[in-house]
Length: 294
Image (tube, rainbow, N blue to C red; front, side, top):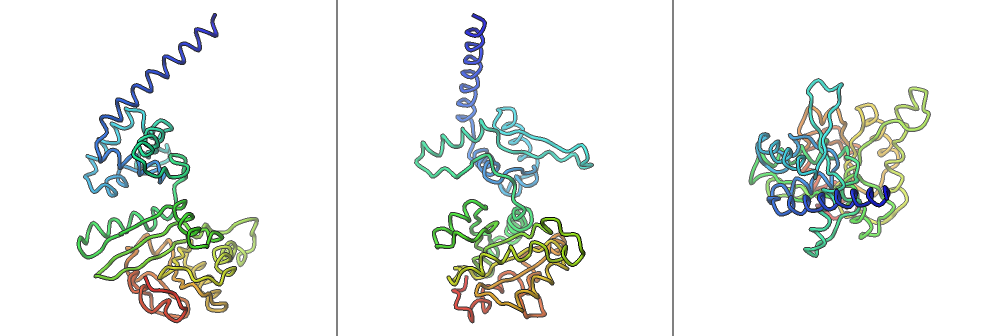
């Protein structure tokens, strides 16, 4: 009897939750749908990130996130060690399910692992800053397309490059020009590297392994690599000069991207002394390698 009553209680709670989700779904504005979709596909995001992606004020983003949180569609957390007391939001299982059902009902493709994706370092280093640059320069600059890690893998498979593992794919427009790019983020030393020289180079070869295994042209204007620091970037550039690849590479460091906008002169090409602007990688970089420009 107690088990039966227990199951009945669980069913009642589930029914109430399902009714709440359906009611919340009916009240979701297009902007709240976009926020939920962004969180489900990109993992953790702050209020400021959401405001930037949706092009709204921070207060509006906060109100929408609070509404989604009250509806049980997103959860939030903050670190006790964070002196800024920043809330970080992510989609709940219920929120991802609501989004999945809506996409399926509309006949649209449901992204893989919706609501269960870890945040990507490429988002904070490139995706969000390029959106901010676009916002500051309307009509002149635009991040026309961005694919997160999983969608980038699917894009690479479509081009018979499934052995490559990139952190993102984008299309950047500036002053009437276009650059298609892949981006890789250096995670730093891997394994049990102890010696200083080992720490400077550990893990860098892994960024290039896939490109060394293929003769197929990569259909982008540039392959961008964001090194953990300036020293590792120098090691990477030296490797690319010593043993060139067919794919057109350009590098920068996290430190530099923390101080400068990613569309500025922060990208270095192997064998060149001067840094280039992002859009300038669209011309000349891959021409001698037989790669179609962006």
